[in-house]
Length: 191
Image (cartoon, rainbow, N blue to C red; front, side, top):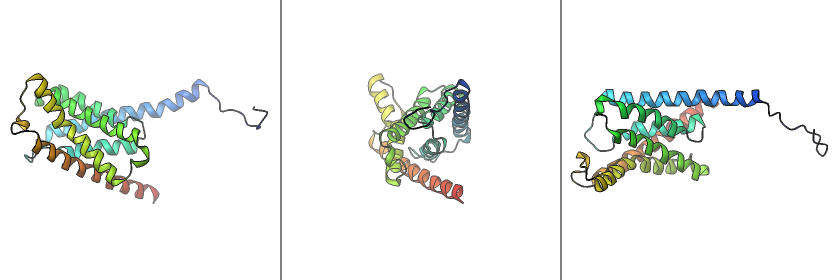
């Protein structure tokens, strides 16, 4: 007990630490599983609109929502890691490492932006901008890989401008969609 204020400090026993770590470990496993499911559904769906960036609508919105709901500092990156593991080893993707890269970069952008500006992370304009930036990491990463490694990617055959613009647009839409889903979640939780 602190004689100056008459209050005992909180207990710091190992059982209290284990109790706090339990829910976090379960949340991490759930996020990894949801990420793996996200990638598996994308690979298995064969849905293609033949527009660059359209698959980012679901990927970015899911990762942004995970960052809101899970309340772990790196929730989107954890979920992206589960997705990257499935995307990287999928025979349907031809063992393409860029599939894993798109999930990881997207999660890192979302989590980094939330850590840098936590006061703005629930503003719809901020979420649209973060969604756009997160989804734009794919064509930018492919462009850098092509420039450095001499690889060619079908999506960049006619340059970077169109794929980048489409990824930005779909990513912004995903950010607004995630904001709307978050608002619905908060409304339902209050009722």
